[in-house]
Amino acid sequence: MIQFAAIILMMLGLYGLLTQRNVIKIIISLNVLEIGLNLFIISVGYVDGGIAPIFTGVASTNAVNFVDPLPQALVLTAIVIGVGTTALGLALAKNIYQKYGTFELDEMGEE
Amino acid sequence: MKNFLAFVASMGLGVMIILSLTSNEFFPEFGSADVSSRVSQGYIDRDVTEANVGVEFGVSENLESGPANIVTAIVADYRSFDTLGEVTVLFVSSLGVALLLGTAVQGRIKLDFRPNFMLKVGSRALFGIILMTGVFIIIHGHLTPGGGFPGGTMIASSILLLYLADDQFRTKVTSFKVLESFAGSLYVLIGIAGLFIADYFLVNFLDNGVLGELFSAGIVPIIYVLIGLKVGSEISGIIDNFLTEEVA
Amino acid sequence: MSNVIDYFQAYQLVDWLSFMISILLVVLAFLAINSKSLIKAVMFISSLSMLAVVGFVVMKAPDVAVTEAVIGSGLVTSLFVFTLLGVGKVGQK
Image 1: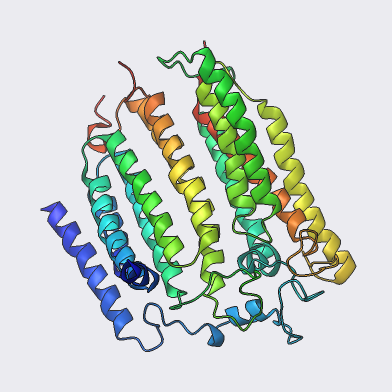
Image 2: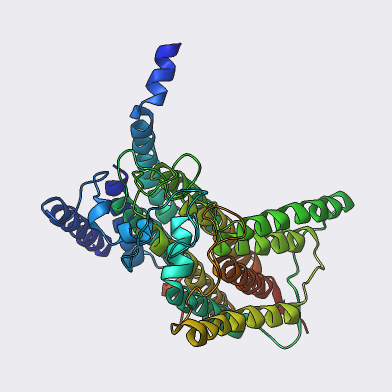
């Protein structure tokens, strides 16, 4: 169920990227796309009745039914890179506003 | 018309993705992933070099990789070179933000907001609590969920609280830059030390200890502390860049 | 009473939870992309990120959940708000 929601989120983000004409809304669409992608990658490694991949006193041996830890490690990396791209995009948006006085792409380049 | 075309294109792509996944016999259904046939099983068993002796919490000593948190074992031990590249990406991004927003003479952005005395004092009290939570998360990164990335960001959030509660406050940006370059260089130096001691870049050359104890897992906690310092100082620099502007 | 506890202990709870999370995720993403006001869109994406945290916990990924809660829901939102504050789109009475 969450898997389908993740795919729909990705497609909503793509739709926003294609249709929005506001710089901030484009960055927001990119964030929606990223959240959907992260949810989808995590869902690939999910096992029914699985346990979070940490050795504890309860789940103490490697015979326990863990969920797949590799997608989680990849998504951990992707989230931190996502904040880097978002910060860079927002800095660009701020510079655009200082030059043109608007966030709307259609109103730029007239003066 | 344009919107409708975009709608049709994204919907068609979504339907194609769903169809190609449901008819694919190699793609597992949700909840029925077979971990034992994947490469991840090697990370769980700690036997990617086929030296498995069985893993047990609190008993096993000197495994191939020490952390009790398997995600940490992948991020900071098996795929540590990947993580080095990632903190480099974050560094380049903070550099780009400083290039785009930095100016010669900087002052705080003028906001129509005057914090009162209680807000300032209360935020100073909360600052310590948030900072200690971040430090705790970093230090226990190899035993519990968390680690260098969320812990470092939590340290940056405590700095953000100080920025929000005082309209004249600014951190010492230069010392953050020094701290960040120090942590990054030390990460690379640890990798090169592994190259000399045990023939591989970023190899875990210290004693792994007993699985599940605080002082275990060799160089993994050291690397996570360095990552936490680096991420925290970089994100604090980004926050400072967003909240300052050129003053005449 | 024990029936209720049994019901919640069985994994039907998780099933209903993931169903509701999915619906809310899609609704919030739609609102975030289609709302006219920029600050409302930012708040919608913050709550979308918070719901994604619940989704990560349901799928047994606590590391990712902690990271997303701190970064996605806290830091990214504050960066958006600072950008809007810096250009005077919001908060100036």
